[in-house]
Length: 350
Image 1 (tube, rainbow, N blue to C red):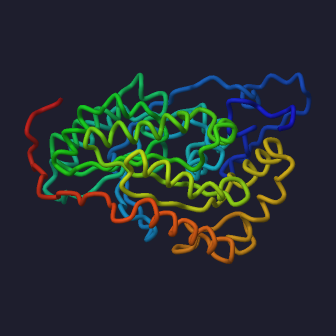
Image 2 (spheres, rainbow, N blue to C red):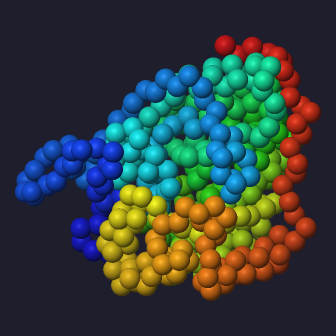
Image 3 (cartoon, one colour):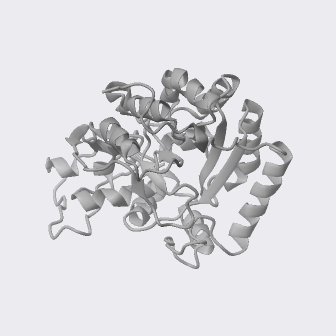
C-alpha cells in the first residue's frame, strides 16, 4: 500500500462528472477547496420523489422492482456500480458518493400509496437494488425499518441485500415476514480476508460478523443467502470455495455471484485505488478483469456483463458451481407467498 492511500475511504479522489462542464483540479498542495478534500464530512440532501418503487428492464435481474431510500453510500466500496448514478444528480462518483447522501424521508408513505393502488400486483420488491438500505445513516433515520413495516402491513414480499449487521435491529419484523414467506435476506460477502475488506469495503461490517448474522437470522427462521459479489480475478477469486463453505455452515440457503465490471467513472477510480492499495499486483488484476470482458474493464452487454466470458470467467463459474453443489446441495430459498397480499393492509401506520 502506497503512502498516499487514504484509509477509511474506497475512492481516493473525486472523479470528473461527465455531465458537468466544470471540473476541479488541485494545482497546489495547500489548496483547501472542499471538493478536493480527502476526508469530506457527511452531507445529507433531502429528495422528494413522486414515487418510490423503481423498475429495471434488465433481463439479468430476477426481481426488477426495487426501493432505495438512500442514494450514495457511506460504506465506500470501491467497485460499487451505483457510483455512476451519483453523476445524474450533479455529484462525483468518487468521494462525493461516499459523503453526499441523498435521503428520501417520504419513502414509507409513498410505498403505502403504491400498495393502495388497484393497479399494484403483489410481487417481490428489492431493498438495496442500488445502495445499501442498512448503511450507517439508517441507524439514525430508520427508513428501512419503516419500509419493512409497510411490507408487513400489506403482505407484499421483500428481498434485502446488505453488508451491515444493523439488520439485526429489525429481526422482530423480519420474523413476522418470514412466518408468511415474505422475506429473503442476502448478505454480500466476497472474501474472508479482513485486510482486503478494510481497503476494498472500508466502512462495512466485518466479514465474520456478517457470517455470524447469517447464523443468527437463520436460527430465528429468517431465510438467508449470500452474494459473492463482485468476484475480482487475481484478488479474491481463489476464496470462492471458502466463502461458500463458511456461509453454508452458518445456515445460508443459497448463494450467487457476479464478476466485477468497471463501467463509467468506476474504471479510473478502481485503477487509482488498486495502484495505491496493491501496487505489486495492480497490472495483473486489471489485465485479468479485461480478460473476462472482451479486453475492456467495462461491460454493458446483457447476459454477459454479470458473469463475464472467456477462460477466466469459465474457471470462476466452474469453481462456483462445484463449491455450491458441495456445500449447499439441495438447499434453496423458500418461494414467496403472493397470496398473502392484503389490498387495504391490516392496520394503519400513518
